[in-house]
Image 1: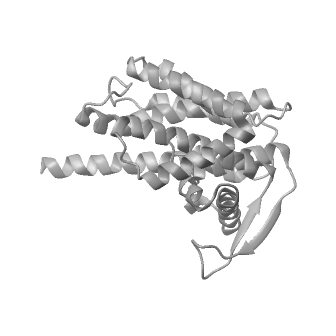
Image 2: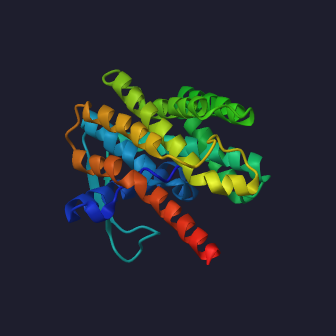
Image 3: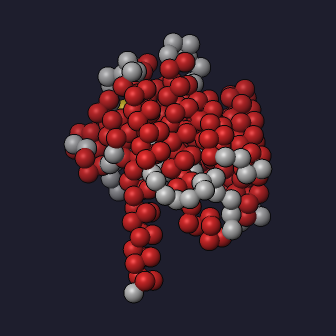
Length: 272
């Protein structure tokens, strides 16, 4: 369900690309230092977006370094971290572990035992630090999966995932908490519906449940993203605003458009 909230790098300046990459590497470093090497497998640009939003809202002190790592051993790379990099690392582990549980339920243990063990240990460590948050997200996801099993409609399901993302964006700060929850909820609804559109044909082919009745008019996606954009523009956020706008107005469509283009080409090939 994740993997959509990323930047359109072709539309970023060199300085913006360097900033974006530095925050990504900073999150990777945080995952490694806090939860070990295996946690790096959970790294995603979705959580870099979380760092951008929270750091932009609260403007905490940043630390930067330039160093090599096991993934980039020959060239030192810039790594930027804030207080919210640590929070984003915790949310990364929680969401990755919950996805692992869902995958195991759906696919019957296809995930390697070493990965399960590593993520289980990391998840237990997060629960020690953020038990209330982990329980809240887990409870909401259980409600979502139960609703999917009962084949509820797309609005009900999207709202439930919106509640999950509202929890993720509420980092515990009282100031702006309501606005961030509202923004996270809108983003979650968009992601859920976007993912349903992207998976529609694959789900139908495999006989899996998809909450969409058809894969037709995509205008609903534009309406949902319009709500996300409107809520973002109302946030008192200046730092990295151009990168965030790039993600909201352009980047979120990249993976989806690539998938729909690939499906269209596949249909064209079969019709020849």
